[in-house]
Length: 288
Image 1: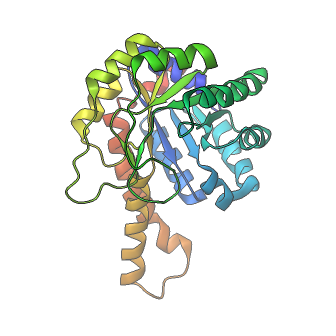
Image 2: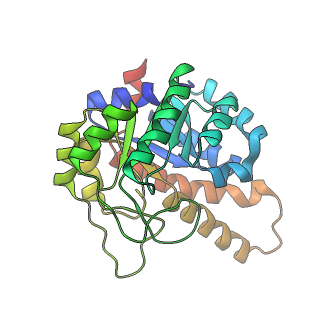
């Protein structure tokens, strides 16, 4: 069933698990993730970044919304890392049921002003808004932006930001990076900081840069305050690595039905592991 981000995340916040937000960039990926989420009875969020949206286009959204409406599990369609007020409005007009405005690289007061304006527009039509405070690191230049260094979110700033903006969920910086971690780099989540922020703001918290992080830390985070975890690089690497292997082994293949099934299978193995790690498997029943 198609629903809003607030509807999905409020249940996760009350119950203590994290909803996967999978970034998708073609229909085969989307259909594959929708299928594995239904098999595991897991609510999920279709995350589409502006760069991904420029690739798939507005007509793609009609297919996504149609599939979401007949899904057996809750699905929200979410604008990931919206950069401007106009981008958010366009997304709402094209059927997104949840939006993010990311002004985290701007000074605090400017971030508040931009986010507050988006909240007013989205709430007017019954949609929820994710804001971001602090900066996520960036391991590469693909898609989602980030900073050269992490600026950690503090509990005091998070409380002020939520009070002043009225956001429904908040992406925080506790040690993650966008993209894939290079060899020799060991990510570390500040779990004590997470709990401090959760004590200060009781709304759903979001972890960006969820790919490539230690499972034990992610599992704890998903049960102690993080209610949405974004996964992009991990599923795309599985999908396209398998595609390279298939095409290298069979260079004359040209039909999607001969190429993509193994790619989707590899992607879904990663997605299923994430769903279980986040504690989202079987949680579809909470929404019925």
